[in-house]
Amino acid sequence: MTADDRTAAQPPSAAGPAAPAATAPALADSAFLRACRREPVPHTPVWFMRQAGRSLPEYRKVREGIGMLDSCMRPDLVTEITLQPVRRHGVDAAIYFSDIVVPLKAIGLDLDIKPGVGPVVERPVRSRADLERLRPLEPGDVEYVTEAVRMLTAELGATPLIGFAGAPFTLASYLVEGGPSRNHEHTKAMMYGDPELWADLLDRLADITTAFLKVQIEAGASAVQLFDSWAGALAPADYRASVLPASAKVFDAVAHYGVPRIHFGVGTGELLGAMSEAGPDVVGADWRVPLDEAARRIGPDKAVQGNLDPAVLFAPREAVETQARRVLDAARGLPGHIFNLGHGVLPDTDPDALTRLVEYVHEQTAR
Ligand SMILES: Cc1c2[nH]c(c1CCC(=O)O)Cc1[nH]c(c(CCC(=O)O)c1C)Cc1[nH]c(c(CCC(=O)O)c1C)Cc1[nH]c(c(C)c1CCC(=O)O)C2
Image (cartoon, rainbow, N blue to C red; front, side, top):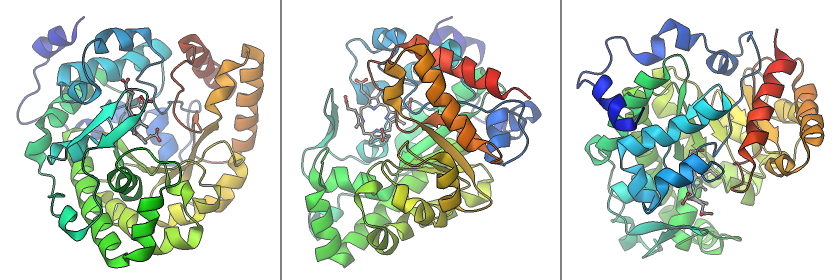
């Protein structure tokens, strides 16, 4: 079935589905949403960050000749690409196919995603005058997101759809540096050197991120993840003083929807407690901290997500299973574990290794 057939079979009505997808009983009872709420699960749910993307030949095929940002604006492509890993791997959740810079593009910033590089911003944001270019995001700026989420929730049925956005710090890093950065030097120069301008920038980004998450939740996303990928570059005191308030503002602003909110960053072992204080329901950890220790740092009443090193998938099957077993052992006795990688799927990963890993986790944890 093509994406077009699907649209024809199930036209997304302007009023949306009769019952909001997020409250349909089978969906609410899915292993993923149960784990987010720290309820007993039939098996440990599994999904992978970057599960939709270059590791899949079917992804490369539909993306042929179409730029990354262009593909994010086409609901038919977004729907197809989001569904590909669900069909192939049998993961317990879909993640909406987009990118953290899509809302910034949608408010008119001159940026692109360069293959093999990442987001590149034509004119970096460095001064108060530059801030004026960061206007608020209106739902009408991203109608294609609403349409794609509706098409997806109709297709996915009882499989949850995770919406996402970039956290203010990670978005700020791309905007201030003008592209990917190892040391975030311009970003930190603004954070330390002009705290007022920095706070303003993060506050505007918090509002844009919130608006982008609201569009996804209101169209039917069952959970949301806030990616603060580069927060691990910060010392805990600086994170708490200069970044946490903006991320907490985002979590607060979407709390009333009641959908689980996940918080994740790379290299954040020392920040897990602070990231938990920002107010999410679930905290993701990378592979540098054992999951039981991560759970201690995250504190009570929150689910944990993670944390297999994505590079492990390049090892032979037995080694992958040994390492996955270590993650499951560390998670034993923790109510609310969502199995994931410690960061995104690497582009050269063998897709069959991912499928086998989903089967392994399901088998090993079947109750
Ligand atoms: C930092 C960040 C970005 N984008 C994202 C983050 C946070 C997650 C993380 O820490 O990895 C988030 C993101 N980007 C993409 C998704 C899709 C959903 C999923 O997880 O499957 C998600 C969740 C698609 C994408 N986003 C991008 C691709 C690759 C583009 C392509 O296929 O041509 C995909 C599938 C581009 C992108 N966009 C970004 C980078 C670093 C890159 C890679 C550049 C490259 O190596 O080519 C910025």
